[in-house]
Amino acid sequence: MTETLIQVRDLTVAFGQGKSQVQAVRSLSFDLARGETLALVGESGSGKSVTALSVLQLLPYPAASHGPGSSITFRGEELVGAGEAALRKIRGNRVAMIFQEPMTSLNPLHTIQKQVSEVLLIHKGLDKAAARRRVLELLRLVGIREPEKRLDAYPHQLSGGQRQRVMIAMALANEPDLLIADEPTTALDVTIQAQVLGLLKRLQRELGMALLLITHDLSIVRHMSDRVAVMTQGEIVETGPTAELFAHPRHAYTQKLLSAEPRGRPAPVPAEAALLMETSDLKVHFPIRRGVLKRTVDHVKAVDGVTLSVRAGETVGVVGESGSGKTTLGFALLRLVPEATGPVVFQGRRIDGLSAKELRPLRSELQVVFQDPSGSLSPRLTVADIVAEGLAIHEPGIGAAERARRIAAALDEVGLDPAMAERYPHEFSGGQRQRIAIARAMILKPAFVVLDEPTSALDMSVQAQIVELLRELQRKHQLGYLFISHDLRVIRAMAHQVLVMKDGKVVEQGEAEALFKAPREPYTQALLKAALDVVIEEPAAA
Image (cartoon, one colour):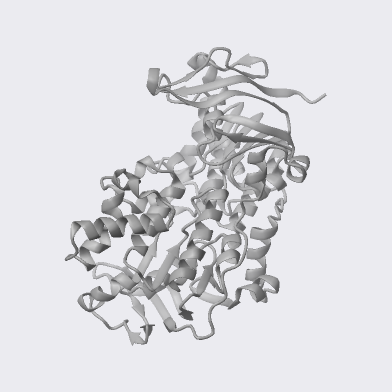
């Protein structure tokens, strides 16, 4: 019989006290056996991460508290309310955790060697030479090439995938019995995501670890987990073997989650649609300067000879891995990158040679929606002030009544209650904040909009809603979109044309349907395979 590593019984987590107390987790129970993978799934705010942090007792106590009868036992040892000395023996040793965002978990001031060896020095008492050998061994294990050259590197000098691998190396340093992975691939490109998941799967098998996987990506759950527990509003509403739960979901919420993937196709572009934006042989080469005199010795070719056109009512999707030049391309079309060279024609007019002053009247027609609404919305401004920012610049003469009417109309159009106008961004969910960002762009009645990863930070069900909203706005106003994303499911639901970028160049472009059905280039084929099939290839042992 397989050993049960962890037992959670009647776990309750509350934040605050008295009338202001919020129940984050309610009467939660589950078991996890050695070598087993249990996936906790649900939308943001469902209590997944709070549950995971409860296992290691890492919640902000005493602001957080557990209700009477809450119990978490690890190999028979009670963790709820355990002393610091007992927990120290378990954390990072027998139970380890990988967090969603490595940049917030890795110390920017310490080298990779120092951070990985720290765990070994604390729990194993190794000397520095032995710790260094073990660090090299771990970095090889997680697939970091030439680890000797990476020991003295700092986190900012590594790519997103490499940082996540370092996090895994730290978590696995003491060969834990249980690994908690909290959204371990959310911030990664699809190809890197497949590599990291394959690595986790191989290491789990080799070390006999149990894996508690927290994610909102159901395609990952389908391929990684043995059992699934579906959470909403702090409760597990359904649990069972993965294949069975996906084939026959019983609870209404589970059914909703499974059907939430962005679906459908964009409305066809009218044959008579006007040409909005076009460019040919567009380049953005950033100079590399060295020496005392800062002479240019080379260039970073962020965008290298891109040609495209966007018509009214058309979406051109741009896909590729991080660093491929997608965002730089979008900003170059909006004339926000001074280094850009090449003709940019908007509504029949060359705009690449215009000064900032000459461009200002056109800015209302050229808008952008960013990836992270939390970062692009000022926390100090009300929703009304945020949405009306553009009006203050482009239509300063309108009265207060007309301003209020336009704000209300913009919020209503994106599916928000105009009564929310006096609230602040932190009072809204991620999906609502993205709707506010879209309203800010739409209030000026633009013709061309750059959408820079507008759904990547959202739950899948919210993604589907935002995709539907963007399609409806496009149909209603005949907007032209440049839609930048590494999520090919979203691109498939949104785009008429697709550009595949790699190292600043377009490696393939064409009609979306044809490209998805029969990609010609090996790079495109690899992207589609990693994103749509979620083929998790386990790397060979180091």
